[in-house]
Length: 381
Image (cartoon, rainbow, N blue to C red; front, side, top):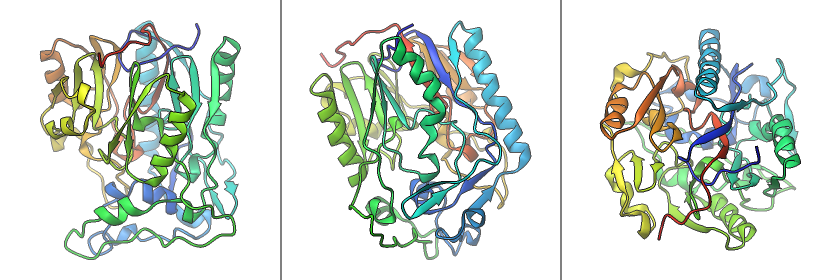
């Protein structure tokens, strides 16, 4: 089928599910620590284990993940793909990251690549167009190349295919203001983001944006803007779209992604972390109903120790995937959310995903919907 995806809820026909193969470590360098700073509990007084040389060699920066968690993640991602196939959805897969992949390098930096797992981040699908967005994490700079066979096939079927300008990603490329403005002490001094090092390749703050910062609502696209990098990328997106969609900027709804804060389940209905998000929405969408589930129970999550790097808040399970306006894939470990959605009339499909807090993503993150039956509708009218 031809590429066609304008929203988050229309009946799903085709999707790409990420790969967790060979996800063995996190590369702790400046771009990674900046991206996840809110959830690394950045205090060298409370958590001295977080101290790491962000400018050291790749091998010295690797934060190893326990093999048990790696294997269980792989099982759960494959289970997600099998569930979607059983629901009648055509599932595409990226090329797996090879074992012991060589580091990738830019001008003045290098990084260990990670698998193409959280596919939502580096690509934005708008209608019949693939837009590769500008990556903010160095280790993911080449991630969309592992999606090239899938994108090429859609291009052959008639899809448009664009790429946002690629950032140089020197240390000075990153706007650190959000991290600087929102640090908390946890009772002791905070561990700072590593000081940017000057480079002859510096061009100032560059455009960086993840597809998961964008909420697709037909003719309207809501984009979370938390720093100058996001704002510059949104400028490019608006010019690129040329008025074919209304782009709305929301200011600092989160540090980066919007899809564990707010998701549209169908026209007129959002799944939201809290009621206060309504005030951040564009005026036409403030009239939509917000479902706010109860706070997740601590027992919903595995217990980790100081050797495990937790990357997300307990609200990661709001990162659900709609396969239709009345059917939603939800983590089976979140019964409170299942109950709320069933009360709202949804058919809930429970799927296992154990280590979402260690790998930074849920079902919406792990997938890229390429074909939904809905058209380019105006839901703000």
